[in-house]
Amino acid sequence: MRKVAVVGIGHAKFGVRTDVNINELAWEAIKLACEDACLTPKDVEFSAVGSGFSSLGYEEILAAATITEYANMMLAGHLRCESACATGSAAVHIAHMRIASGISDVVMALGVEKMTEVDTPTMVELIGRAGSYLWEYENFGCSFPGYYALLATHHMAKFGTTAEDLARVAVKNHHYGRINENAYLRNEITVEDVLASRPIAWPNKFLDCCPINDGSAAIILASEEKAKEIAEKNRKPVIWIKGVGVAGDTAYIGARRDLYSIRSSELSSQRAYKMAGISPEDLDVATVHDCFTIGEILAYEDVGFCKKGDGVKLINERQTYHDGKIPVNVDGGLKAKGHPIGATGCSMVYEITKQLREEVEEERQVKVKSGLGMAHNVGGTGHSCYITILGRES
Amino acid sequence: MNEEKAALPFIADKKGNIQLKSARTLSLNFIIPVHRVMKFWEGIREGKLLTTKCKKCQKIYFPPKMDCPDCMISDMEWIELSGDAELESFNQIFVKPASFSNYPDYICALGKLKEGPRVLAWLTGITKEDAKVGMKLKLRPKVVPEEERLTYEFIPGEG
Image (tube, rainbow over all chains, first blue to last red; front, side, top):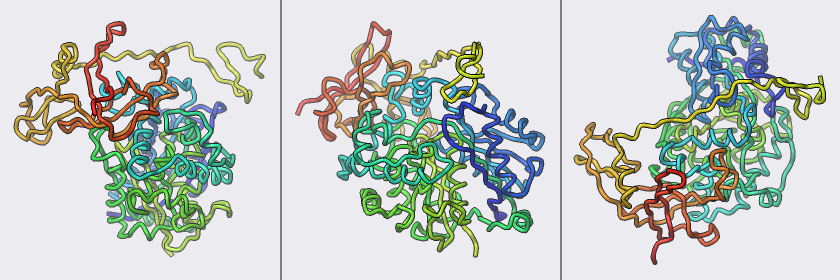
């Protein structure tokens, strides 16, 4: 298997992007990623387009085709992929395989989503259908925040986790969102603000939930030879993909092993650590899937930053702030950036790459020691999980 | 072009961004095959909770299915469930999906059945303040004639 490097990254501003259509939004990230790698769209040998809501959240049903046409990169070939909220990471993994296998030398993974071209109740309807439709939705209308609320209530009963503990995750992520110019929500909040916000799917309140919005991020991957060529031109450190891990679990939440962990998160992280030959303690930085505040606590526990039930200690002791033991989501996370479904995974890989290159705003730059970072991206409520471990070689 | 000047098919939002309101509406209403597990729905109509069990490995499936991927066979038997369950988790849905907008705020619960499977269904007859993880529940079939709908729900159990 060949080595694979991240050579170019681009990120559009996340938000309610009524100023652009899906192709224009994608182009913002594609252009930045190409410029970052000193490449043009015509140098890209294949495009993996991650987008979960084509023809549901926006008008195009064949988004990979319309986007690559807009960027004049369609002749190389493309596909659209989907793995629920882990769609962007799935695109990165396809691009990774394409290069590792020796088929291509330069591949783009693009994550893009528009979720605000339809009204909010309709989007809540579409996302709520993410489960085993006839047995969870048809009769029960369990909204997506509702599923994570089930995980939160159980965690609270089993481990004594409180609404205040969960609120501290939102406080941290808003703090870093304020500094990140690509984030949607740029305001500081307090624990009291979170507790006082209106219930969405109790115990999930408005400020426990990530916003529905629009965005795109692009990641260009390359073979070792090509990466070294690009590094000569852009004078940026080469960031390598050191390990990838994927796992899945039942669609029906009732059929899960337990309700206090996400098994696909455990399995995929173990697989990625093994491939990279590292342990969780080796990481300098991580982005984890905080679609709801409980999601970040579960991630701490499932990927091995702490024992089961100890996740709240990490946030309460501020160990996941940028100067803590293991900085997590110091870009604002899904909570403050927003979660344009298909874009999120690529946004995570963008952030880890920026951190390892030491290119982010000073107030949130982590100390790069091992040069290792991890993107953890859950699909659905654990239906899938994709882990990408990146490393900077000294 | 600003908000006042925008006329259909154009819409201007608060920021002054112009969007085109499509003249084509997409409406989806799925017709879902249930032929192979129809016994489950017949059971609901008769006041019974049924599910399937693999005759070879004895695994009980919920939702019911007619194929056991572990044994690679379709030799399943229908068993009746007692409905006795324990509450493992619950929520309350305040912001509802479009097609549920006419219901009052409802509680979705996960209950572990005595026979093993964990089931998601509405929990009725109790407020979220009185519901406690670990409490006994009863899962019962329910026919909703006014909505032409068959379902099942948890209610608080004895003890």
